[in-house]
Each structure stands twice: as structure tokens, then as C-alpha cells.
Image (cartoon, rainbow, N blue to C red; front, side, top):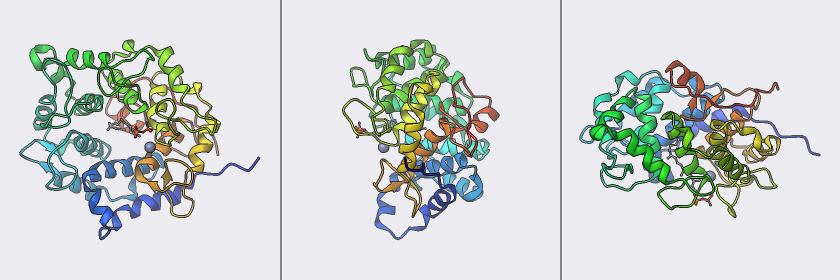
Length: 335
Ligand code: GRG
Ligand code: ZN
């Protein structure tokens, strides 16, 4: 059997450091709408590798604040972009990790967040234009929790806010124990993470059929060790986050073959330029880099820091903020 590859931390740190240095590339401009998410993914990846300081903290905080959309009371993906829920959660997470959340306009943010809950169905929209998805239910709950303002959800909508949001997530649960993006939508690893993590924050994991869901999630592991997000689909490194974080919250991480998954993630590294791809041999990107590292961290890979599966932030941060919930981590191995 060939010797197992190792995780090249120094190379991946350099890969993340250089992401922002290609400002003349067309692709840099084409991905502007993902810039705030990208900064968050890069920062959390560095934190998992124990190298948070590899990007300048003050410069990052200044960038986040330059994306504030004063009209909307939310953060955009880049300066002058309209505020959106997706970039707003990333901005709040970055500020929290950098211990600078006190400079955000919390009251305006809470108002923006609560305005996105549908007063009858409990569905949550991503912005005022209205596309709804359980992703946004999670973002609402996670952002309010990080801001220390979950109680505002209780008081919203004539005191029915929390129950409305929970009720909608419950209606998105399927016969296979999984969750979809809306009522009647197919179960999918990504939607399962958002629904299970939102219920964990709201202390309503009693609504999850743990045995059935953990079985369905463990069935997502393919013979090559990688996980897919739903039956008959290809394996992809990012499900090492979406599926595994849900298993961690449910206390069933050991229902997958950890050795084979570790091997699959390690094989997806680019050992020349750094970064991790969706599967071995493909182009790397920061999205699969953070989620590959997060998967390795939950699996106890040596030399990595713990990641909180509920918030996708370093556990030291959620502990410091008093937000850490119960979840399972495999014991950290020694090198
Ligand atoms: C804080 C980590 C974090 C997230 C914020 C945006 C969000 C909340 C969650 C996204 C959840 C989600 C739906 C993830 C799935 C992303 C993905 C890999 C989609 C691919 O879907 P398909 O249908 O791929 O293209 P498959 O694998 O089914 O072929
Ligand atoms: Zn992917």
C-alpha cells in the first residue's frame, strides 16, 4: 500500500495569502459577488491551520467595514454592492473571529435580518427581492446568535418569530430524515447542514430523526472514501464539511470510515501550488480548501485546530463568545 500523503500546511497557507494578489485577472472581477465569502473561507482555513495571523487583521476588518450598505443596514459582498444575507453572515463571522464585532451596527443588522422572515410561512429570504431557501433560515439564526440577539426573534412577529422559523425548517424535513431547500425539495447534504445547525442553535434537535438521518448521511460515502451530497451523485470534498458537520452535531461522526475520507481529502490537495480541489486532479479553490481542512479537523487530523460544526468558526471563538453547543469531535491524533 502506498504511504499516505501528508497535509502540506505551509503550502496551503501561502496559497491563501496569494489569493488576493491577482487583481488584474478577469476571474478576480468575475468573482466580486463572492469576495466577502472568500475572505471568510480564507480566514477560517488559516485558523484551522493555526495561522490566523497570516493575513493582516486590521486590513481585513477595514475591508469588511467598507462593504457596509448604509441604505440596507447590511453588508454587501464588496464595496458598493447591495447588502445581502450571504455576505452579511460572512462579515459578522469575520468580525467575531477578529474580536471586532463591537464596531458593527448591531441594531441595524438585527432590523435587516428580522425583515427577511415571512410573517405567515416562516420562510426566510436572502434580501428584499425575496428568493427563499433554508440556507437563509440558518444564516438568520446564526447571525442573530453571533450578535447576541436571538431574543429579538422571539419578540418579532407578535412573539411568533422563533416558532415560525422552526416550523418552516420542520416542514422541509423528508421521509429519509434529511432536509431540502424548501418544503417538498429533495434532501441534500448542504441543506441538511443548514437545517440541523439552525435547529442546534435554537435548541430544537428533538425535531431531527437522528437514526434515519445519520444512516442516510453515512450512506453518502463512496468506495473511494469521498462523500456525495445525495444518492447517485459524485463525491466532492465540500461534503466533508456539509455532511460531516451534521454527523458531528448528531454525535455520529464515527458512522463513516474516517481513514478513507482522510485519504480522499489528502489526495485532493495540489501539492505544487497549494489548495484543495473538489476531487483528486481537479483545480483547487478556496471553498474546497476550507471545507477539506474543516473535514480533516473534525476527523482528528494531527496539527489542526478544532472547528465548531454549528457555526463553521474556530471552536475557541464560539467558546469565548459563550455560544458553543454540544457536538462530537474525533480525538486529535498525534503526528
Ligand atoms: C457558514 C459554512 C457556512 C455556510 C453559510 C450558504 C450556506 C450558509 C450554506 C450553503 C449550504 C449548501 C446548499 C451547500 C451545498 C453547496 C453545493 C456543493 C451545491 C452543489 O449542488 P449540486 O446540485 O451538486 O450542483 P451535487 O453534488 O448534488 O451534484
Ligand atoms: Zn463541492
